Image (cartoon, rainbow, N blue to C red; front, side):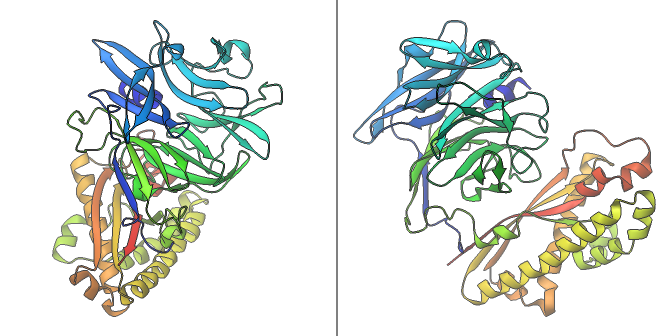
Length: 467
């Protein structure tokens, strides 16, 4: 848990793979430590956070960086670093000449501060009725229609679980209203962190480790809207990896920064430590089109009955997903007798998503016929009713049954593209879904309960289409 908290604190029609250039930030910014949260405030000035352990003690400081000849240097910004505290997460209110930042006393106790005219003020002490939890961090100041807001991350009560993103109204005198939760379209029972609102795009960017949507670790997401009305979050697939991807920010319409502990050519980097990356969108005519035309389908969850397909029989007589789907749907009465609400799942999720799958396959065929290459990323899940080895194998079999349906769909019109390597499908068997609690000892509840039902699935997470 402590390692997670370190990270939390410091922390179109066609694919944009050919349009986005991602590279490690040049200069002396990145080190053998964790370097993250790069916040550029003008053409030559930026702030960032660097963190490391000195024995068992965590050390974290805010640095200021100046750009010269396309290289960024690093210098400690003494005004925001305090003895016996770990510091990070800068955000700027240029109108009031305020700097928002975080100070933490250990792993679990973090407060948001305002720095102005040589004085740092703890908002939890000034507004104890507003900041009621022991963890308030990652402030982001922004303005919409002349109304000022502060977004932040907190574990306060009445959220959705884990760390949630919250919003505060700031009045004309700089006072704070009561926090508003970002809502279910953004927050989940997992952790949502590092919020950044881009006013030019009316879009909130943030990171989440919700395993129903991520490629691994923390992924970057976005949602369009305003603090009391957000669209369903969508993944920034072109920026995400199997590692932790955090602190996404635009500097202008076509470039920006994020932090990640992904492998790279920085000789100091290892799996523990984040580095700062920069990105440039090379096609400025489509600066905000960061998700392919398949976003209306994704993520697409295809569900399976318990222990289906049978692993032993699949190897000798493989069945495809359509057969599994039909057999599963025939059990609607059996499942509904256990819980009447299960009938909604069968109609809306099981049947509805299968129909969406068929629409998706027609779309794939259209693009492949028109000369495009398609890459698909699929992730397999299983509920926690068996040991991990079995679940990993079952997840893989479920992915294979879905691929089999792809290739047999409407007399196999996709098979030729698959054989010619124009349609590529990447398999990522996961094994057990990371549900929050172990199944009940009552085996019927384990099989027929909604938690297990929703965890027996294969998810189509990402589709890239390109020439």
